[in-house]
View 1: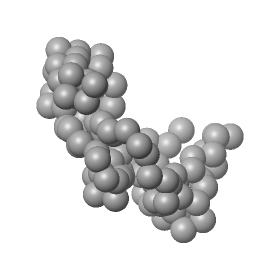
View 2: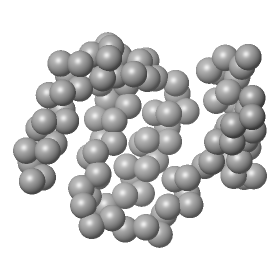
View 3: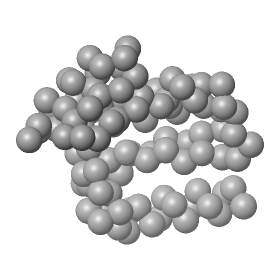
Length: 101
């Protein structure tokens, strides 16, 4: 079993190849592949304070390369931010929806 830090290094080193096979699953590097897709709707990008660094890095890159996106980092939460800090998660999602509907 690979821990999160080892997996992050493996994914980063495999980005040029676009895929990484870990325990039978392929992880695709999709942010660069979607650079030409221009959504017609607002995008909410969420990460969490204790998420793996690779997730935070890719989320920020996605936000930088996306028009009409908003980036949020949820404090006191890991990758499952909706479980770790549900009040903050729900507040951010509700405010985003209210602003964009």
